[in-house]
Length: 218
Image (cartoon, rainbow, N blue to C red; front, side):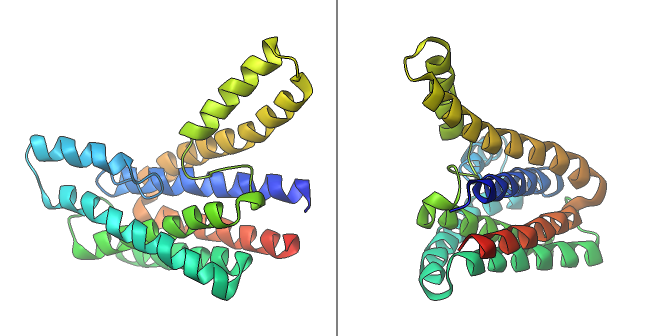
């Protein structure tokens, strides 16, 4: 398996996850689409301060996410690694095109929430991809807590440990994921503010690139 290809796929997936997460947060009433556990916090806060419909949508993201992961596990057996990424790319592209056509941004409309849930479903597929094909990336690409923890352990080992070469290599791999996710967050924040949910179209394009790279890897 080409290490350079793994680096690139990891980077693209991390960027897409951070990007999509921030676009939906900025342009769709603070909804997380990739790191959906964050919706627990926002949901609880909105409930105690006066629930609205968008608070309950945050709760609905969980069964949608679970269904997506289950579907992703099934699809991985039926279609293979690269096609799972292609399906994610198609969903994100459709979501972006529809959002662009309807100029969707922070509107309390059924269509906007459906678009957000499509994005959540796409991110669920990416989470499933990371679990089913663990060796295709350097680690989880949609949540950074575990990666930051590992990077912290690696940094300590580089500074005061015995096996510094191995730790440095691991730290480099973790940095690809963490910095990619952070870059995606910045891009998603800016473009989500400027273009609303239509900005997720860029994530769909990135996933098409990722699909092409994964085809070379298998």
